[in-house]
Amino acid sequence: MLEDQTRDPQAPKGRPTPKRSEAQQQRRKAVNTPTDRKAAAKQAREARRVDLAKRREALANGDERYLPATHQGPVRKFTRDYVDSRYRVAEFFLPMAVLILVGSLMPAVQTLSLFLWVLVIVLILVDSVITGFSLRRQLATRFPDQNTGRAVTYGLMRTLQMRRMRLPKPQVQRGAKL
Image 1 (tube, one colour):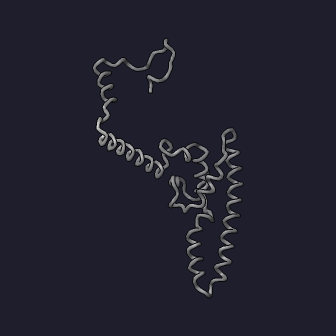
Image 2 (image 1 turned 120 degrees about the vertical axis):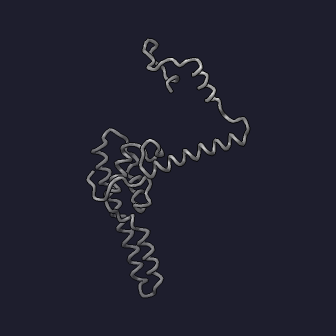
Image 3 (image 1 turned 90 degrees about the vertical axis):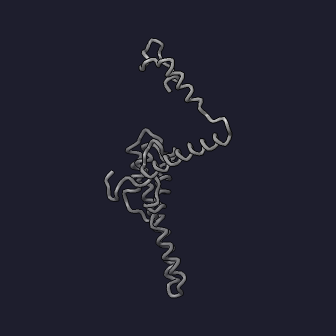
């Protein structure tokens, strides 16, 4: 707030002095906390609900101001956009796993399903290694002076989620140039 910040005493304050009646009204509003415990708890619950709704909306829209700290910053935004701009093998793991599991229940396809498990895991590992190296290179060129410590891990964890389940929601289309 403006009152808490230190400033040069000779500098103008940048706002008019409030009238005494206005200042007293503001002080009364600030002290307007309920005295009974139930009303205070209800007011706190309502404030918490409003704050959570704001955060949920920010996760859906990618609004930087209300995102949790783990998702904030230009490095994390670039990492999200980089991961979301391409198809990744890992994002199709769950649908493939369901198909392989259903296939493993049929005796005629059990051997094939075992081979498919190994193939899917190897494809995910190879894709993750390639994505990790290319993301690390991109981060080093775009953000040479910033800490990009856990951004690669953040991006790889994002690849494991199906695209429509990712939070914050993808802000770029597939195939977009970054």
